[in-house]
Length: 156
Image 1 (cartoon, one colour):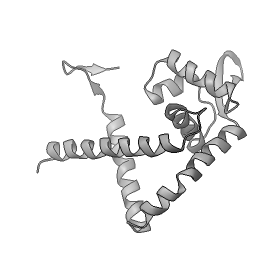
Image 2 (cartoon, helix red, strand yellow):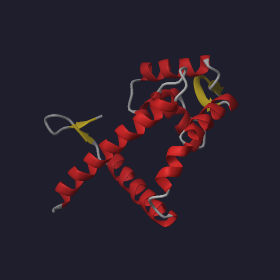
Image 3 (cartoon, helix red, strand yellow):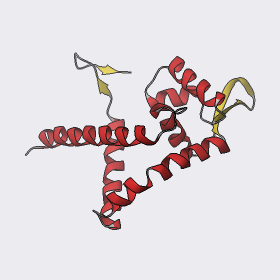
């Protein structure tokens, strides 16, 4: 099997994993939190959670700025994130995760705990660590390659 065929199969497996993850996540999310909103809480929890603007988050999530503004507005209304003015530039706002947002994030992960425990019995800690390293490397590779449009041109 050549590299292109292997990449096609890899994308297929990742797609299936995405569906599995979405299904399991949807089962445990509270009514007031969507999968996209949880994804943003997850991002803020696992990153530095400082100095990110709504525009930065829109780029990271590959959505428009108005779409990110709407997501953030709902999370602000629930008390899960705060928008703080940037020092020195009142036009910019930084997004930060609140204690309530961190608690909501943790509650979802705890609700997934039984699934995680069951999955963990099928692989050793070393196998899981190796898989995580390989997936991170692959994600970084995918992110580094521009998205090609229908005619083969790069899409911004």
